[in-house]
Image 1 (cartoon, rainbow, N blue to C red):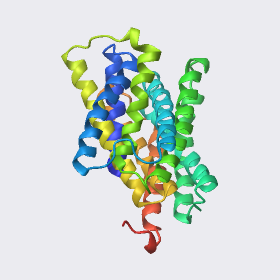
Image 2 (image 1 turned 135 degrees about the horizontal axis):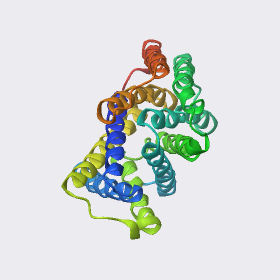
Image 3 (image 1 turned 30 degrees about the horizontal axis):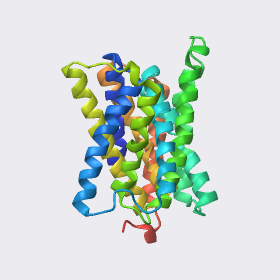
Length: 282
């Protein structure tokens, strides 16, 4: 899950850079989806899995939820500091745990609940400046709502992934994501696409590659652990995002961000240390 978190943090930084280079939001998602299709099909062919999978209704639902979440999250990343956008998105373990409890009958362990509580405390510290800044709140309202909407969509998608890993190969699950993204982006914004320069193409390819790595690592984590615990560990992406935002975009973390990040890391450590011995990785 830590590999997934770092890959997604790098992806977020590249999304921000692509937007600064003038690439439209939906085109970023489109190119990312094309790369994901190529890599997923190559892996599916390597392992000999059926590309369309077995539970196609759930796979399509996972793709739709993922596309909705990704569009919302990318919008937030473009219009907010990377760390703030990532913090809002990382409400998704709360949604995932709730949905997994309702639909998968997964009871969160004490370790998972402790991680979520500590991480939400950290989230509160880091989001506070966004709400109490001197700027008019209306300027941040829609990006904030997009970030929270992306969190809900991710919670739905991750719960479906947890349901699907019992019967589907990870690359098949990942494949349905871009299969929805490609027609969706073309229908909604294909007329606005531009031809990037060399740097723009390099950034777009990087987005696709790091996203694929993050998706595969995430799906594997869901396969080896409960949905709620796996996603609670992914909170460390907030810390990675804050560091990348500071290094590449001069987004200096506030003291509240540093305090919140400490809570996030402590929550992840608690989740690992309190893991029941019977829940070890298979």
